[in-house]
Structure formats: structure tokens, C-alpha cells
Image (tube, rainbow over all chains, first blue to last red; front, side, top):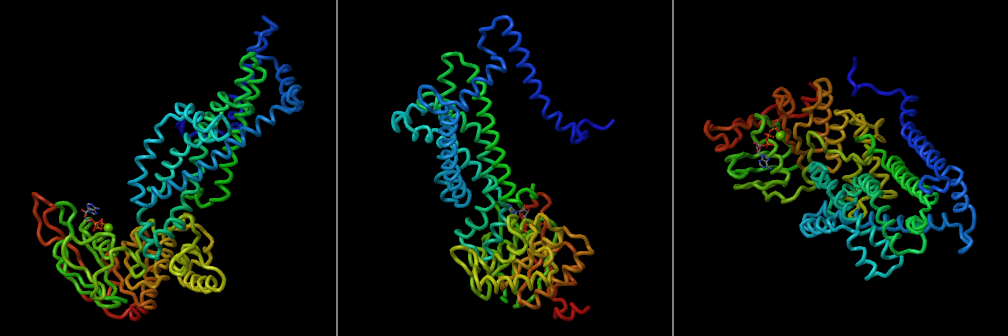
Length: 271
Length: 247
Ligand SMILES: Nc1ncnc2c1ncn2[C@@H]1O[C@H](COP(=O)(O)OP(=O)(O)OP(=O)(O)O)[C@@H](O)[C@H]1O
Ligand SMILES: [Mg+2]
């Protein structure tokens, strides 16, 4: 009998196994929804598939009576804009900080303890401060994500820079590299894949901060909508929205993974 | 080419004496092979020559001038591993030295300059048998191919001194013969002074024009760190590389 750790599912079974938990979840939902609706047709907790389809259709394809806009797309566009801009800013700052902290001992001495301390601030705790200082507009929401995500990215990137074998750095110097060339041609290119990984791991946090900020002060956005309809116990809106957010986050993660593989093939074979 | 002079050199880490009272004179263009027990300070000696370690006491002179305090293109190094840049292809790894010295800001060459550099790189790749692998990444190369590339990478900068730290240690004996041929050829073509650490005595005798044996003169069984290693044998060997290439 081979050991369990050496038993690998064949391709077909692997696909089936991957789908299985999803099927179980859907089945459990349908069963729960049916039983509750049979007992009480006005139950709002687990809406029927028909109700869900109607609501999704209304939100995704019909104009809202009050605003004349198709709400799901307005919300999606608003949220995506915020999160993409915020992650872009975070990645840029994180990479710059991480590279200089990792490469230049004086910058490390100056900035590493500070970044480590700042990364311990619970971002949600300073959300009120952001709203007071930056107002209730876009800037505060983006700032929350940036503040929450950047220090972690910077530390991760700096860690990677520190992991580069000293042999490499010495070798580059014997080939005539200045600090500048060492940073731009040896260290920086080797940090890109790790930057992508760091951003991927921070996607969950970024969405968390975004939804929190939108829940508190916003006029559109996926998080805003969820917290708005919560008052009416509109599970038929909340559940599809949650599903949609999950799908968006998953797609972002997937695209980053593909980009990493396409752009940095050398990093794949190295693992 | 450059001569190396070591005068009453000591290297200590804390209270551990690694090298004690080293005195040497190595002339231009010698091929120095270094052997010695593991942990006796051979790598430390190369790191001193490289400028990444400072002597605790004593002097280290290249062409009778104090050694520059940082690694530079005048002294090339080949480590046992990790000498290549994983994000660059074989050609890019080889071009790197030319690009660093030829373009101080971008570190990249363009146009005619790039073509000249590529010609030089391709000729070198051809001579070490890596031309067919020129677009591969280091992780796709065998150990022997990686070390050949690493040596060529240093040689392309035309260093005065080439330092090799057990460059063939991880390779099997069959491949080593080819590597010896390559290193001797590059040495005679480029007129460098070579220092090569090896744990293979036969190899050291074959390649070197001079063999240095590092060992401790004195031992304190109660305190093994009290005394350091020094050069216990300094043997001149056969002189001309070309003779040995033919042999
Ligand atoms: N940075 C350091 N700090 C403290 N001790 C060190 C340092 N580098 C080397 N040593 C000590 O110096 C001694 C010599 O080390 P070195 O690496 O030069 O040996 P070596 O002769 O190259 O051995 P090997 O053949 O195993 O490579 C060792 O005892 C090691 O513990
Ligand atoms: Mg060593």
C-alpha cells in the first residue's frame, strides 16, 4: 500500500475533486432555501433561485428607477477604479521602499524600523482620521487601502532583496556595477516576481479595506450597495454581490499569476 | 596581469585566528593553485584579495599598491555557485560586464556598441561550447555549463586577477578535463594572474604554475582557534601554459 502522500489523483478525478466542494455548497443552499421557503414563503434569509435570477437581472441589466443607472455596473466600476488605483500606488511605493531598504544599508537603518512599526497600525482604526483629514471622497478610501497594504508589500519586497545571495552582488561589482546599476539591473529585475506575489497575497486585505471604507461613506460601490440593502434584509442582492466580489478578486489574482508567468519565465523554472 | 604581495598578513574573526603571518610574492601571470584542509581560511584569503574582507593586520598589495577596498572589474571572481544572474539569459549574463563598463547610467548598450559587444560575447560563447544554449536561463543549464559561463562572464571584463573558489568542486571528473582545458586557454589568451582554490591535489599540480598549501604550523588541542593557517608549502611548478595544454 503506497503512502497517502504519494497517491496523486489522475487528471479527470482531480477536476471532479476541485468542483466537488462547490457542488456541495450549492446543493446545501438549494436544500436550505427550499425547506425554509416551504415553511414560510416570505422568508428572506435564503432566497430561491428564481428570486436571485430576477434580482440579478434587475441590477445588472435594467436601469434603476431612481437614478436611471444600471446599478451593478456603476458599483463595479466605482469599486474597481478605487482598488486598482490603490493597488497600483501601493505596489509602486512598496517596490521603491523595498528595493532601497533591501539594497542600501543606510536607507535600511533609516526606514526599516519605521516601516515595520507603521505596518502594525490597524488601518481600520485610523479610518476616521482619514475621513476627517481627507474628507469623505475618493482620496480617503484609496488612502486607507494604500496605508493598509503598502508596508506589507514593502517589507516583503525588502525581504526578497535581502535573500539575494551575496555572491551575486559581489560578482556584479567585479563586473563593474555601480550601486545604481546593481540596483536597477541586478536587484530590481529579481524583485518583480515577488512584488506580484506580494500584491496577490494582499488582494484580500485590499478588498476588506475597500468594502469597509465604502460601507461607511460612499454613494456607490459594491461595498456601499451591500451595506445599503442590508437594512431591508435583501439577501437576494447581498448574496450575488458577494459572489461577484469574490469572482472579481479571483480574476485579479488569476491575471496577476498569468502575468508573472508570462513576464518572468525565469522565475518559474527557478522554483 | 598584476603581481600580488602579501606582507605579515593576519586575519582574525573575534578571537579566532584564521590566517596568521602570511608572506607571499606572486608574479605577473602566474597560475596559483591553493589547497588546504576545509575551514583553514582559503576562501577568506580570496575574499581579502577581492576586497570584501579587510586584513586584521599586515599588508596586501597589487602591483605594489594597496588593494582597493571594494570589489572591482580588475579582479574577477568565480564562486562555487550563485555566480550567475538567474533573470538573465546566457548571452545577457555574458554581456553584463561589457554593459556595466560601457554604459554607466542605463547599463545597456545599443546600436554599433551592442553589436561589437555581441560579437565578442558570441566568440567567447563559441569557445566555451555554450553558443547553442545562448538563449537559455541559468537554471536550465547543467552545473558544468553554469561554471563555464561564470568563468567567461568574469574573463570578458579582462580582469588583471581572476579568483576561482573551487569552481569545479561540484562537477564530475569527466567534465573537469574539459573545464581545465578551457580555463588554461582563457588564462593564456587573457594574460591574467589566477588564484584557484581546489580540493583536488592532482588538479592543482596539473594546472598551476605555483602551488600553495595552507595549513596550521601550530596546534593547541585545548583551543583550536588560537592559531591560524599560513602558507606551509609554496611550490613553483611547470612554467608554460602552452606546454601543458598540448600535454
Ligand atoms: N564572516 C565570518 N565570521 C566569522 N568567522 C568566519 C567568517 N568567515 C569565515 N570564518 C571562519 O574562518 C575559517 C575559515 O573559513 P574559510 O571559508 O576561509 O575556509 P576554507 O578554507 O575556504 O574552507 P572550505 O575548504 O571548507 O571552503 C572558518 O573556521 C570559518 O568558521
Ligand atoms: Mg571555501
